[in-house]
Image 1: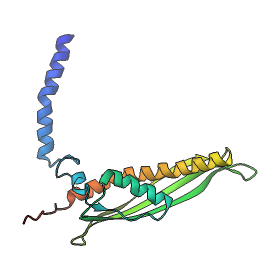
Image 2: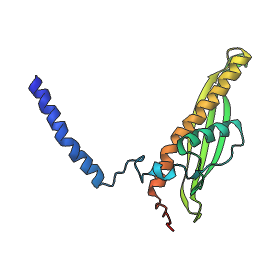
Image 3: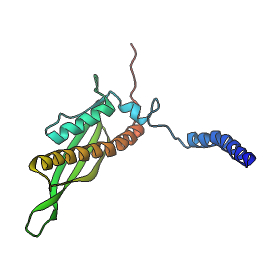
Image 4: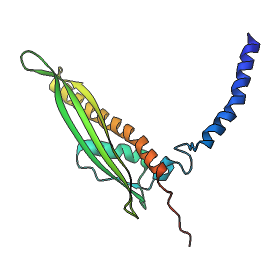
Length: 175
């Protein structure tokens, strides 16, 4: 039994470098490696000013991931739309559950050239119950909005990283 496990381990150890070589041969670059898509966006992406409570949470979440630029190279345009819809209605017309639906459109542009690097849209939903007290329902509503916006930010990041990875890297000028 031990020898078969040892053989399997040895096969895995031998196969690991071959797998890495195959991935590097196909152009695979880790997103968070130096020069990867995430590295290109870090501390150089300008975000829009928030104009609502939901957009404030979105910008805060993206700032935590992208940083605050001193000298931005990219401009990220965002259009956030959040709506609520009654989901469960009792026979007497009381709504007991709401869906919060979010739609986030984005454009990523190179500031110097004005070239659009990427654009797209992500959508998701969250929900909350309205069966508790007024205070509990309002807290659940705020929490559902926050969860939704964080989900949209999580869905947006891989798209931004993929878009940035396709863009040509910026040249740094030396005096």
